[in-house]
Length: 538
Image (cartoon, rainbow, N blue to C red; front, side, top):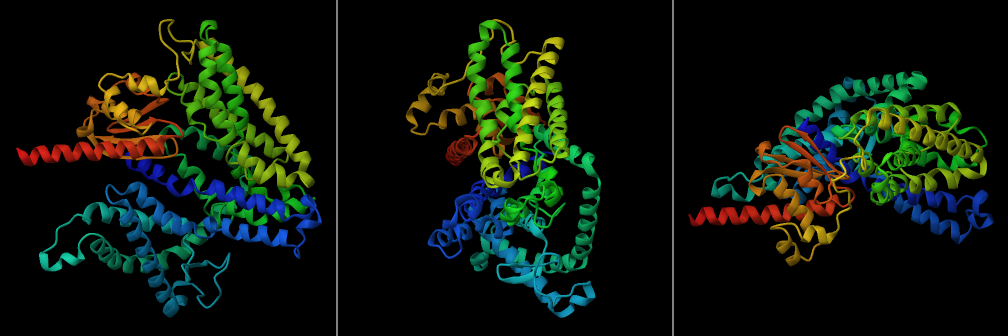
């Protein structure tokens, strides 16, 4: 579980690039559509040519998705020298593609592959770094990245005899990877064509499972958030071939212009769209949840609860990052989170039943750019339906959450003991922390105090085994979990909560987590260097 959680967090390194690229592609589709902007968008105009150039650049993230995962995962998973690990992963991945290409060029029919055809969608072949090879998608990229990261963590620092010193470090990792890729290439040629057949079967099953398949997908995507394993639910659908070739995101972007200009209902054009709609709960569900938490708070605490809820709710609704809001009630009232997952799945399924379809995995900003604006001309009725159903479910969320909180007297924010302080912590609060304030005031980085505070709460630098992060969580493995402080030790520095699983801990930081992680690693490196120096002196 710990390793899977760390792996899921590392997936965010490349995934975080997709939102901006998707928005830019969506905007260029809008600006080159004559139905939306008039004759200025005709193909012969400089306006059209300019936006097509922008679109070509925006597509880079999606056309090089495999390479992004190959490079991005080692950055999040390598324990040291992660930049070198990314380089090692890239060259090893390209080496694998060349081995596969060579094998299939000579013996393609023996593996059931027609390697003479052009690489295209549906052929099972793809072009990777100008090499025609098997289309293993991001799964192949993830596999190689995982192998290389393991090799890097195990062998990068290995000391070779002096006369072989030139082969140490990255060279040694690439050498080992080179020889491992030979049997891996053979195995992929043997197995992957059959896997592709299985994926096609899974695609058919999911398409035929109807509303229940979509409901279960959304339910699990929400329910598994506390474990960090929700990435493994949506990734094969959004970025892989689980239901459509290339994933729902790429499929939507590829066909956005066609969908926007068609009068055919989107549900008929994109029936797999239910697997791309889990962002609706981030907008409409968050609104109802926040209302219920505010309504059930003690009267004396309402202002302070509102100050906590407003930024968390706006973050969820606008950007689609829900953890700051969800983790305000997850650990004190987990039953609410199960209800949240149930309502999220039900709302999305009802929307789909009424014809709502689109690329909707995140918040208002992304949905507006990729759905509402480009689709409004011919699909305005669907958008209105989405809002009507969404707001109705905001009300349902509010009523259900309010009823359960009051019925079971759940200790949600603002309902705790009267003497318990409710506040948002400021930078000044950080600086006033005992034994932290002095160090923080000496640091010019605003994230330093939180990073050092979390490290102390985790038992100090000597108790840290490894550290990484995902979109909102600092993920740390410790040597001795008994040295880790209570939740309040983390909340004092602004954490929204903490997940404990043996020696694996997830500190819910929020959107500042990349900066906090960098400071955490910086402090950790300094502490380790100090300890090493003292040991040498002794």
